[in-house]
Length: 121
Length: 121
Image 1: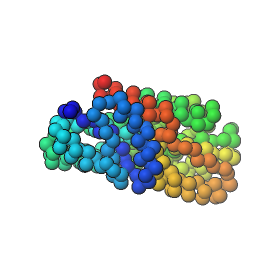
Image 2: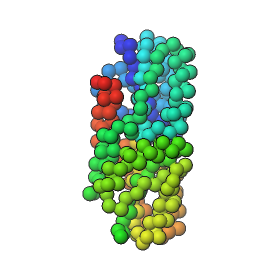
Image 3: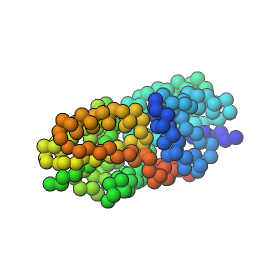
Image 4: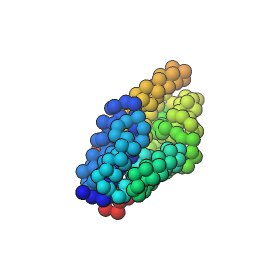
């Protein structure tokens, strides 16, 4: 049992194939980080609510929510912080919201490699 | 003048800071690829409609739309193809929709590096 849970937060989609792609994208991270799980903000399961509730029921004291989002817009600046405030109070644990992956310079370089390959450059 | 325009398609957001992050993310790709531009599906400018119209007015015959999306859900499977069919017919040019960056294995590895760094691992 770890006292620190990492939740890789994805948006969610009504299309189940979206989640399949996402699970593949997250799998290297999940394999590398102890006690990490995927959680979806909306439309897909497991929900952020369910994963925070599970963490609390397992005795976790601290949750870090790491958004697998390319950028922070309304969702990460308003909706998610409001959800986390409510969940933190409800379950009595500390929840930290990290900056989204898209704010890291490494991601722009990775995107360039992928775009060049896609275009056969 | 190139006859092939590459549009890096982003979702768009009501938050202007979202676009700033996105422009930074796309800048290595824009610097590396001749005749490429950003276009937004909704909420932000320049819109996909405006960028395809501009390409047509500049004599471009072929547009490749490369989605800077982590996964393909309803937007990339339904909304964007419908928009592109309409734009292709309206402007008389060929538009190809590439698979999103998130389906490339390199992105999962980049995400792992970023997640580990974010967590101080």
